[in-house]
Image (cartoon, rainbow, N blue to C red; front, side, top):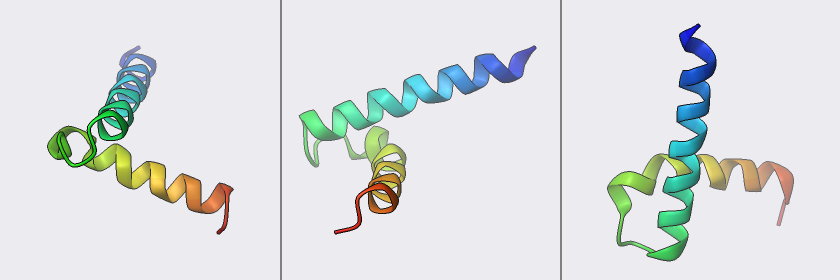
Length: 49
């Protein structure tokens, strides 16, 4: 019962972190660090440069 809620909360946290890291680059590192790393990994696998 708690698993879907946790997944949803994690996704929301990830979105907020990504938004914060994009809005304020270098400003909110503590909150957007994990999401930034995950975003970089997913972007590398999706769009190889």
